[in-house]
Length: 241
Image 1 (cartoon, helix red, strand yellow):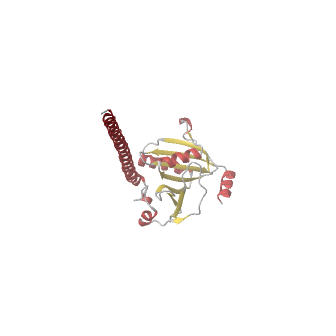
Image 2: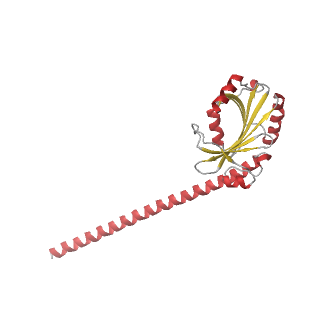
Image 3: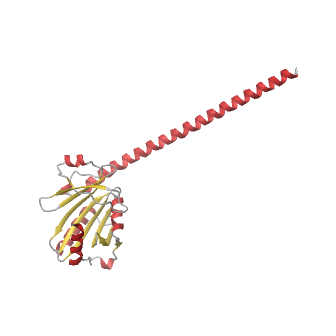
């Protein structure tokens, strides 16, 4: 009789252990499944948010492009840009700049002597910056140019003096949008002004400001543009070559 009770007790204990192990296994499976499901949902939400951000960036940047880049938008591929009639010539590879993701650069020469540079992310293959380079023949062209920029983009969100734009001093006016940023770069030398208009991602413009050691311009110096000396121009030309 005692033996029967012992065996019965063992069977009860064994059944309890088996049930406990089954519950533990089910709990582990459920928690793992729930965690994986939550991770999948989070990844899906992140992809949807990224897609929405890129769509907003395309729409916003397309509206900011000047006439010569009508229809162009950040986030486009090389093929999409070429399909709009732009002739993109690959430029020689350049060493990556500190703090800036590597870019694949293409250039387009304009009939008026201007130049456009297109920068595509090496990682994604998507357009992240455009540069339009042109010249003002005299210093008298600065005020009308800025007036036109203000009419197009509004009051600048930043004005900067940048002592080291590839070894040259420049003045920069920036406009920060939600998904896009604009920088108008003035290089004054003698009586001439070299202009570079950047339309790029905010991160790209911010990295450029850091590299050039830019600092905000005090109100009392807004009309005092930095000027490059002939020696600085000669040295920068030699280094570029």
